[in-house]
Length: 120
Image (tube, rainbow, N blue to C red):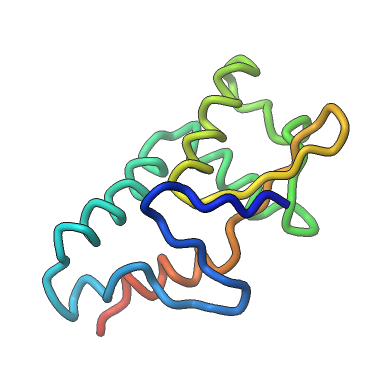
């Protein structure tokens, strides 16, 4: 799978549940942490992206071919655009296999986001 690090965002290694930033209730976010966190939530703030992210996250085996998740009511180029946005902020990784691209939720990202939103 592609593990290319998105600019400015750390990839979370498998098994880690360390948020990019401290829990929101533990201390005020730094400017850098706020920018990083806002980028992730902004990417998920679009209903199509949220649906695509959910389809990948809930797909059997933890990965989904773009051919299996593209029926979200927009054109294929728009689906690709939204998936790229999710990759750019570090929420998804992808791997090309022949003509299809398979997507996975970046390792640890759900646990890290949950940890950031819990009380500290």
